[in-house]
Length: 244
Image 1 (cartoon, helix red, strand yellow):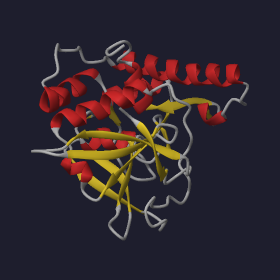
Image 2 (cartoon, rainbow, N blue to C red):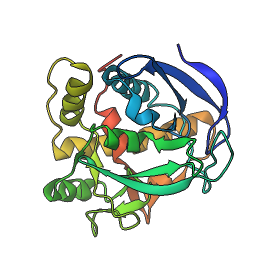
Image 3 (cartoon, one colour):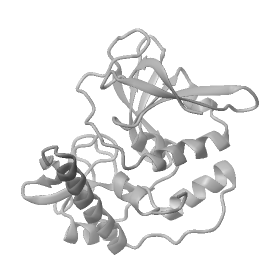
Image 4 (spheres, helix red, strand yellow):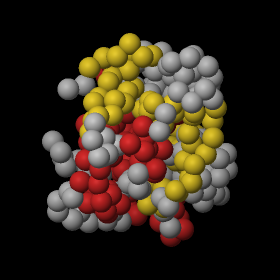
């Protein structure tokens, strides 16, 4: 059962939520979530110690909290153990390139939800025809790796961190879940039009929720007058009631 922990989030400093998950071979792994900042703190090498079922559980927790209010990451992230500044770097796996934030004293690393999904193979890279199709409806998306805006009308990769554009979609998730937890029935892959429609729906839903909460509407929904949102959130929305 998840419980609050005294550890502060490396970004917002709020108490993170502790989850105890099965480790490989034997034992348990304790990881800390901040759903507001969409990040996970792993002690040193804990991201490699998760049992297959634990990886699937992390994905389901991320999906379950997909509607939580999101905060942008702070410019400087701090280790929850030593409070030293986390060093930003990159890792490369088969699924793509992703950003990591590591404690230089080897206490651990902070991963965004999107980076975790890339690391564990829940995404696939978009093809050029898919990017062109999405660009016709959406125009600008936010890079899943670093969060920078990407103008799909002019770019097919992030100009800030050079990560390829990737999507969390049902077919990629199905393969990953079968690898990690022998998950069930096959889900159809999303067509480019479905992805674009999901992106639009995510942006509209966030604006609606902000208005209803009384908070000012964040203009990150528009970049240069063009609709902008992120592929990661759209990918989560494609699953709808998968675990409801």
